[in-house]
Amino acid sequence: MSTTFSTEEKAAMRAAAAEAKAAKAGADLEAACLAAIAAMTGTDKELAETLHQLVAKHTSLGSKTWYGMPAYTNADGKVVVFFQSAAKFKVRYATIGFQPDAKLDDGNLWPNAYAVTKLGANEQKQLVALLKKAVG
Image 1 (cartoon, rainbow, N blue to C red):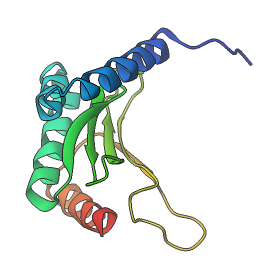
Image 2 (image 1 turned 180 degrees about the vertical axis):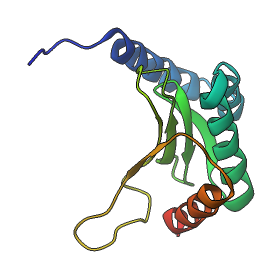
Image 3 (image 1 turned 30 degrees about the vertical axis):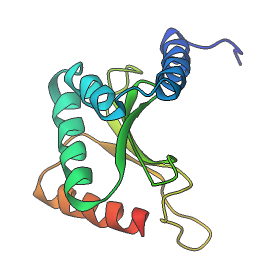
């Protein structure tokens, strides 16, 4: 097993360091999130835009970037949900993931990330329910 990081992983780590520095300097975190979405193309962009709209409409989460990807935070500034584009890591699907501050715990086993290729009406309804549960 290799202990080296891929080019994409290294870029994500550099993005995280730059994000932390920008946040300390008082950068506009919402603008950074929107810029990250605007830089995407195709299905990734459509999915990220839809997630952003659903988060804004149905939760009080704040926007920022996290490892260069759109992310949404609670009042404590902790990431609750994030979007990872398929293109970033050259995989076949995008991911919508939830961090430990998401209130999705359900017994001893529950999903914390979802592969997504389309967000039609049914998927949006499911996602809204997850978002509402995640923020409590």
